[in-house]
Length: 478
Picture 1 (cartoon, rainbow, N blue to C red):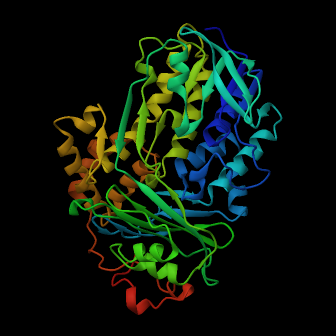
Picture 2 (cartoon, rainbow, N blue to C red; picture 1 turned 180 degrees about the vertical axis):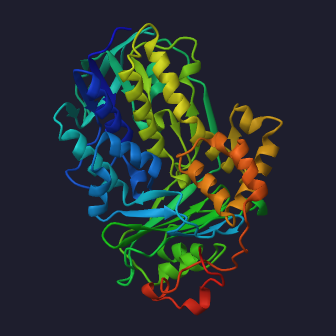
Picture 3 (cartoon, rainbow, N blue to C red; picture 1 turned 30 degrees about the horizontal axis):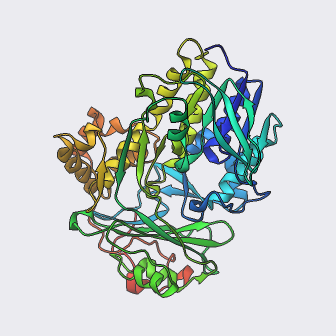
């Protein structure tokens, strides 16, 4: 295709706005179509119910956003977001035991999703190069099976469809994407899809943290042990702006989500350690309980289509969505925006240019896809509807054993943990866990003593009003 001059991005969320920002660097005209009316501040909106649950922005994604929008990290921190070093600022019970708090090999920005979205959206739209059609829904794509020439839209509350002509249309509508329906209307077959569904559900509530919880109190996570072959139960306490904690309780298929206040605390009591329950007990609930069952891993393969229309791209959760417990969605979207920027700067649009770019976008999601998939197929009752040989092939069991071995070593071996954390945060490729350097570390890295209790530092429990004698660690965190 010839170099486009007009683009329409479908969806004004995190992935859509980053995509629009990149396109505006290279194209003459960029329009974002968003069904919601976007809030004027860091507030929730109807079309993003999952935003009420825990979100983190890994350092890999935060670094890309900072390159695209200098000053973003500083603005988030000034608004009250926390920069949490992994593993120095986190108290974690993994499936293998308590994680030593090694020096940070990566970090995550922790705050509410509305603050993340608004901070980035405000910076992007301040440039004045992007037009946003709010309160507008997509009807279908214009064009045919060989080329998309625009999109037909209408007001979200009804009305006649109208055409927005474009040389490039990008689907960034997330998990609710209607791409399959749009392609069928163009006479194209369904896109191949893989699903790994552990039946993940989330129940989340916002709390006012104790007055003594300063900006140094760690994030807390209690994970399930998949090796028990029981449905999983997780709990996290993550700091948010405004002196608040967001507490999310997670299940896999076979365990009901807590829906009422007494059930919320009661569920926390069933976790492998009482620390989440104890922190709930010293905090003040300030929101209702929100539930979500949108935790399945789902990946499309548009790059494998025999015919793919020029002028159409798929990005973000519309392309690949992951179990949110791993925090990969926003960073994967940022990495895709970075890849798109590089392809456009390199003059990717030629004959078959759209397919070439889509292939690059699909490569970006492969690492988070395989990491999330391998984790989730370990849970009892997981429905593995994937054709990916790494998740279904004869060596899958060996991959899982190796993954467990790394997890067991990572919590007590500092250099192994450094590599594993960089991979988990998408700062290093997943293949780093199989190169000669890492395999050498598995033989030579020192192993710290097992921690029998959560590794809080002196004074941390006191700052939130808990007695250190009851649950303090018996070892000294590194």
